[in-house]
Image (cartoon, rainbow, N blue to C red; front, top):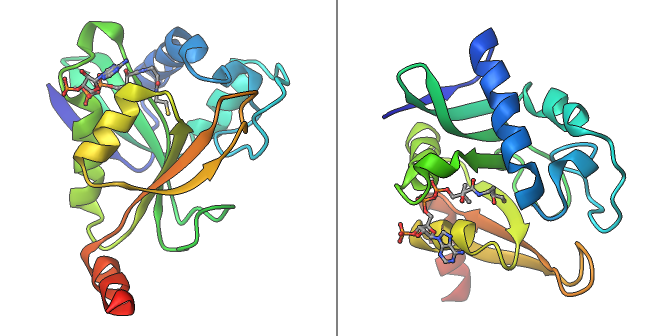
Length: 182
Ligand SMILES: CC(C)(COP(=O)(O)OP(=O)(O)OC[C@H]1O[C@@H](n2cnc3c(N)ncnc32)[C@H](O)[C@@H]1OP(=O)(O)O)[C@@H](O)C(=O)NCCC(=O)NCCS
């Protein structure tokens, strides 16, 4: 399996496979991606029904880490550089926006490898992401890699479904916060 970081994705076959994978994973997200208008939409409580292409067209302009088995796309993570938005305090950052691993390849460490690739490529930047509080697969990966919970938005995705923001700080920021607490 090849793990590849791409800052501008133009390969037509990969873009088609990316869209297919997004459609495959759509209903596993809360709320479904096809009901969102962008990867960074703030309100996630009311479904808007924008359709998958609204989401895909915004996502495909971002950076990617891809998992490739030959020519086959096994999974991906999209991320933004220097994302500015609520709950993301440091401006020089990476923001992991979407990840789907094909069911055939889950539980083999691909999402873990996506984050590791980003950490290796941008060691001096914090990585932010968000998910919902019962996405146990994603949460397991975040905890394994040393991400910490930075925000919890109660009932943000509907009654009883909370949004959680996580951050992986680079070494120099960890040092600063240690200093502050001394
Ligand atoms: C979330 C997702 C990307 C994880 O991809 P992956 O390549 O299988 O992740 P990894 O193999 O690196 O790690 C997942 C870990 O969570 C565990 N896990 C998966 N589902 C779980 C669950 N329901 N409860 C507890 N642990 C779970 C796996 O066993 C694995 O742990 P292990 O390595 O100790 O066995 C994949 O499940 C997926 O595409 N889900 C649908 C879309 C989604 O939820 N995307 C993220 C939205 S923010």
